[in-house]
Length: 88
Image 1 (cartoon, rainbow, N blue to C red):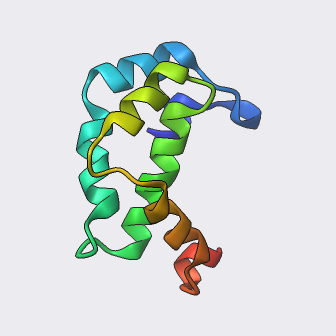
Image 2 (cartoon, rainbow, N blue to C red; image 1 turned 180 degrees about the horizontal axis):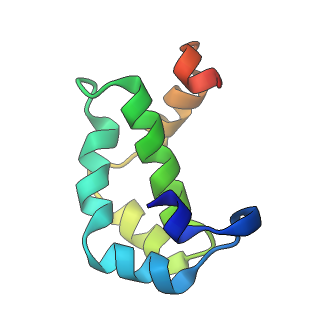
């Protein structure tokens, strides 16, 4: 899904980003991001996928921010993790 949203040099593909959001990807992915029972590796991939979905797409960013469970603190904790998964 990451490659669908961004292509060469991470240029946003708004048509695909919109379509992916319309298929309820954001509400499906957010619980995976915040669930500490999900492996850190999976949560990193989910964070990256969400970033690709909202890259240069204000409407999708609003949808993400409207998700009750979503918090940038979750992403910040992943960025600050000392895990090999998050450092590579």
